[in-house]
Amino acid sequence: LPPLAANEDEGARLFDDWLEQTEDPMDKLESFPAILAGDFPDGSVDVAFMKLGYVDIVEETDVEALFEAYTAMMDDLSASYPTVTFLHVTVTPTRWQPENNAKIEEFNELVRQEYADRGRLVDLAGALSRCPDGTVDRHETEEGDSYSQICEAFTRDGGHLSPEGAATAAAELLSVVAANLVDR
Image (cartoon, rainbow, N blue to C red):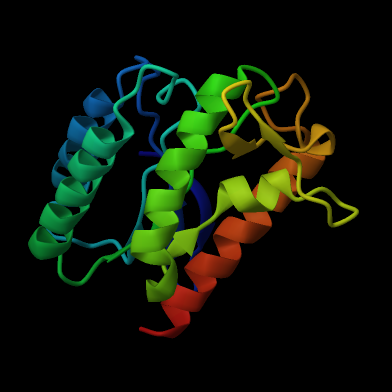
């Protein structure tokens, strides 16, 4: 993995790896442990996380099953790598497909309920659905399911981040990473 940022004096580095956009989140749940085992078999990483994307959770997704598989994977990784701090990242909604966003919201609520009180939640969905004026971009599907969507200011095309969205996402991520590194 190429370093994205490095501080030679401190030895801190940030690595990134791309999990293929297969639209099958179970593939990603299998790939993440394999990446850790291949690149960091000795657990020589302080903080690790994976993020599912909006293509991974759609109207047909069995959210409960996906969440159970996610928590099982993270529990296994925590047991295998006891010195690594694992963070949990909510899935960013889009500005289209309300039914998909409602499923994303359902998954995100499970993640928040399970991990928010542990100080290891990177709530990208929350940060990116709260607009610069402080309002939250909330809606309902025709069936009455509530969901948030990404604030228009934070996206360039309804799904991918604009520069302002990228800065907002980075601030959310870095604040949680920093808080967890201080605790070490």
